[in-house]
Length: 111
Length: 112
Image (cartoon, rainbow over the protein chains, first blue to last red):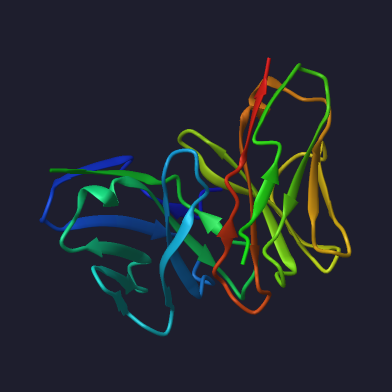
């Protein structure tokens, strides 16, 4: 069962523009959400997270928005840079139990 | 501080064989989780170990098993390999109180 869904397998944006990656979830018990970035031949690396008690968390060029009523979160990258090109995974957890991941979105930032 | 290490990095096995993968977590991390990554499926949760006990388990058949040692190192075993088991197997460790996981580079398993 896909409790976390990333419906866009790929996204291409121009350098300097905004990248918006989306994620939907079905389990209302999820209380913590994370974004991971993965380069080829490497394991995913933690990027940014948000607790369900918040609706926004910002870290430099990265901002995550959470809409609990819509069970939707998004990651905004502004401005996008070529080095941001990677696969981005959305993940969610309930009560600090096992983490559920989406299928990933491949972001390509063109110079 | 050294990161999560996984051995071997690449493995080729024949259908029907069994395989053991190893993971060494970051020092001080007592929680170790295993994931299977296949194209289009993202990361599928296999199991999590904490202090040598399996704490959570995903929806995988019993052919997939694991264990954790007293030094927090973990092994994952897959018996009677099937072609569909070809995947990247990722191990991640974390402090039990934190959500953020730190991943190793993975073991690429190919079953022929």
